[in-house]
Amino acid sequence: MDEERALYIVRAGEAGAIERVLRDYSDKHRATFKFESTDEEKRKKLCEGIFKILVKDIPTTCQVSCLEVLRILSRDKKILVPVTTKENMQILLRLAKLNESDDSLEKVSDFPVIVESLKCLCNIVFNSQMAQQLSLELNLAAKLCNLLRKCKDRKYISDIKCFDLRLLFLLSLLHTDIRSQLRYELQGLPLLTQILESAFSIKWTDEYESAIDHNGPPLSPQETDCAIEALKALFNVTVDSWKVHKESDSHQFRVMAAVLRHCLLIVGPTEDKTEELHSNAVNLLSNVPVSCLDVLICPLTHDETAQEATTLDEPPNDETAEKETILENNTMTYNGMNMEAIHVLLNFMEKRIDKGSSYREGLTPVLSLLTECSRAHRNIRKFLKDQVLPPLRDVTNRPEVGSTVRNKLVRLMTHVDLGVKQIAAEFLFVLCKERVDSLLKYTGYGNAAGLLAARGLLTGGRGDNWYSEDEDTDTEEYKNAKPNINLITGHLEEPMPNPIDEMTEEQKEYEAMKLVNMLDKLSREELLKPMGLKPDGTITPLEEALTQYSIIEEASSDTD
Image 1 (cartoon, rainbow, N blue to C red):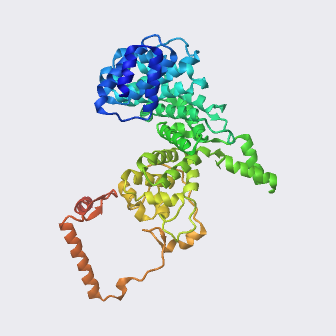
Image 2 (cartoon, rainbow, N blue to C red):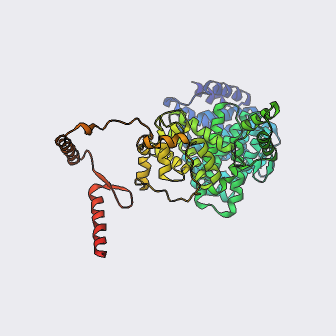
Image 3 (spheres, rainbow, N blue to C red):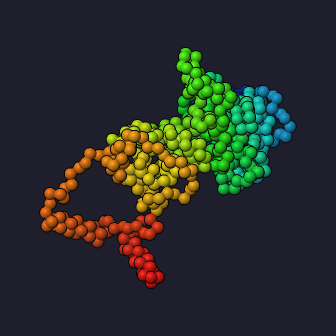
């Protein structure tokens, strides 16, 4: 009934009546996302009627009402097939000022029309394959970049930027060809980075360092939404950057990483928005070549260094205590470097672990990022080692029992999701400089067995990557407890009586044969497969391992 009445008024063609009836329709169906199939034809005709009205010279308020209804109707994929034509797409492009080459964003009354047109285009492109093909034909990506350049430094049109960026994200998500066009032809990387700079109001203090006001206000909701859309678009543009990184791009990637560092150190209007902002920043950092991630840490400023020296050299008083508090609250330092961004990433990782769900999507990106940073940058690795794997003192509990970051990560090493447990184990392994003995000290052999088996390190050794040779220092508590630590469980156990000490030789032989028969039965029924270690340390079926060792022995005897 609503569609019939609206269609009748639209066909009549009187602008005032059209505006009123369409405003009523949009108010009623603003939250409608599922539509009755019985009225499908009426909705198609209403869409066609609205496009015919939009080509006419009608008041701005009537244009907005038409576009609001069109946006609601475009949520239904079925009705878009007949109305998604090149002519209709061009109507929306004109209303969104995407066909304009001159700087025509001076008329404030046009802004609602531009925003609603962009919203319609987002829905239509997302729901219609025909619209996606027409977007390529009409070179929509280039037009969107041109509109962004017109408004990148003008904060009062943030809604236009936000939906322009959302549409750019959708295009680059749905068409891989557009990603390379954005990256190289349209210079999307510097353009989108500048959009982020504008959203964060960044003031540069050095080439790759920005001023951080820890007591400043949070980002506004509009700035936060705009930044999130820019981060998502940049992710698509740079998704393969780590594969094709050129030395000439280093500067641009470092600038982007510095902007992302700033992003990690600020907050949004709500805790949820802050987490969403940081989550997208983490995803984008994963695309940055690891050699450019050194800008996530920076030398302490003169004031920070002076504060640190004061708290160390002067006798404590109220003033120095206040300075020390400021230093602790505002900076995380290590070896003369500001580690705030890395500390934020570590806290973000712990929050994702504490959520207890969606580990693959929510946790693995930040774990992978911290692993690669630790592997490539010594200061980051040593700082994270101090935070995650501090010197062992209490070894009475199993490594997976407790509430520390180490305990939480060790629990993940036996997670049911293979990808999650692999990256958690890899992170801890890298923090231990890929040394098996160091990893076992913090995790126990049982928790680390999966990683060591995959790496062929069950018999010990170290990984392939090179790290500095500085040795870990054990605490006195650990040294005293070490002889009684169970290597499998990784914790201190009271000596247990040996059950076979009280057995006679006949009983021992009987129990041994009983065990052999049970293993043989499980093996023949293929419920259990005996495994052995190959000479290279990897696991293989026992028969194959014995064969390889016999071949080596024969070769050795032939040589003799």
